[in-house]
Length: 249
Image 1 (cartoon, helix red, strand yellow):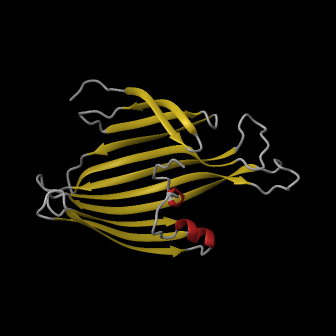
Image 2: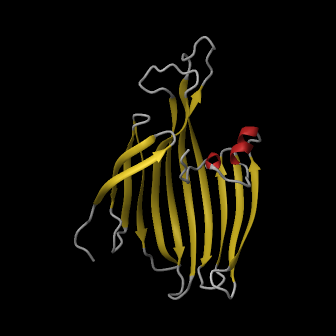
Image 3: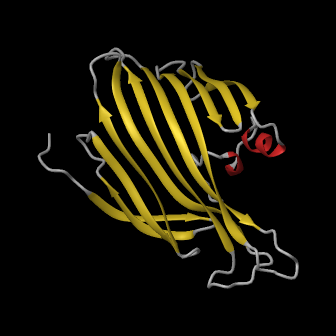
């Protein structure tokens, strides 16, 4: 045990297509022995948009006596720009373009089940909510009014997600599977994914198998809802409506 609370401060540097280079600072207390209350916060500044950006996470961990080994209450947040427009825009500011921002706050509650001391199995149940504010570029202007009427509109989306993850990290033939459900105002989504590695009796040679089953239910059956939230065989930043991933653009 340590009789002092430690705060670590270090430089931080980030980059994406819309915010450009973003210097800042990282504040955190992640150390050993672990703290029950833990945080990592990185305020940044974008020279491309002349605005503040950043990300952070704050959590508290319990070690109960019962079915769960750990319970983690956590909140994640991030705010960056995700699209821009520079065509038919008269620069009324030092910026040559209009940039749209997203701001996300995602509280979660995660339960890790007890297992035998020598077991390679980890089982986790996670409940997570998403509050996402997106700015959109409104270009409903007349051709003779190049800039007039061009502005940013805001819309807040709320999503919920529940998932159960089972992983057996045994030395030979490890496997895992995840059962997940998502819900929004316009859709419901359910999916199951399983992964298995079949080891050969040759070093560094294995067969990797993946199975996936998903169902998408559109509550608001429009092309915009289906194109954004529907099941996709390929995954890019455009599909990341929860902003869980990290993309350059």
